[in-house]
Length: 434
Image (cartoon, rainbow, N blue to C red):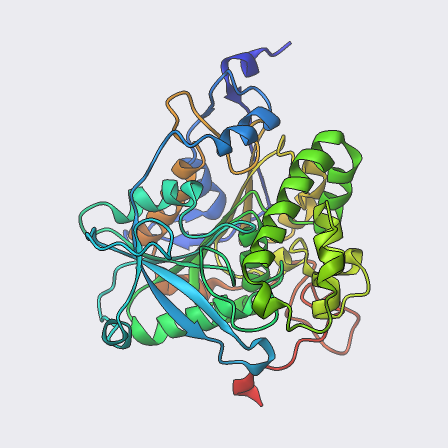
């Protein structure tokens, strides 16, 4: 019998297609995606006192560490009228002494002149990050990854796209975000491409942000402007996750109830704007206790879903995985009590040569705490991103695109096919295409 878990030794496994894509290095040699992922993933050695997913996850509420990352905020107005409103993007900058008590710590607004002149011809790699449910650029799990990338000489550039209303940003329309809200990310990526034309762009998503990131990558397919992307603790199958939470006391009374409370608090902060949404009965919203109830009363009516189940099925990213056409690494703890194991699309990973899933037997949700307080997941995430950016011929990646055996977004319209990005909810064409 294996007792290594008592020492905090988690088992690490990789799930992937039979023939992962081969990437050409600047040196001229080639390695496949699996070999790269394995080479940057150290043994998973966690705090032995946090020996299950619940204890690891509970540790995330302990504020015992700080990582100083400084941001300047730029507020965008949505270009597509279908998703009218504003949203905030926090760009990582050098340390400064200013403070703004209306924003999270170490965050201030760009002046109008600074925001207007945001552009550069440098070729630094740039990371575009999405946070988890009701989080923001201030989240410590996010800063664990940013620090080794940006806080070094000649380091990366980075930004965090805050979900609408999060991180003390203002809502200027009657809607919140949802698990399929890729539109703000798409606008930011297009803006970055114009303002920083020489920077290779990379994507990173955590939890709900991982689900959104995966959906975005699938929607963009071969046209994606990212060179590679990583997601951590993606819930993947939202309906499976919701049902799993409802099956246990901890799931319903701790996790689901806490997430519902966080979203209700967020809605209360922005009540003046959100109350303008005639589709939502905010008195009913105030009575919700669990996450699925909040989604039933808010996400359903707002976006036209008849039930929360319909919303979960439509917004899940497990099928989107099949349409991804950039090197993609997903990291997931199999004892995650929120993004549960039964929702992980193991078989879909076997069908896409662009994707590798790294699972650990322990680690919880966005946790992976080690004995010294470090977070293990930051090592494979930063290792993967830095290796791709520094050693791989980025221009050659787009030339290696090929369809998968099943679940291809490329198909012959004359024969039956499965399109992973076909959705039951019709999305209006982008304004630029009208």
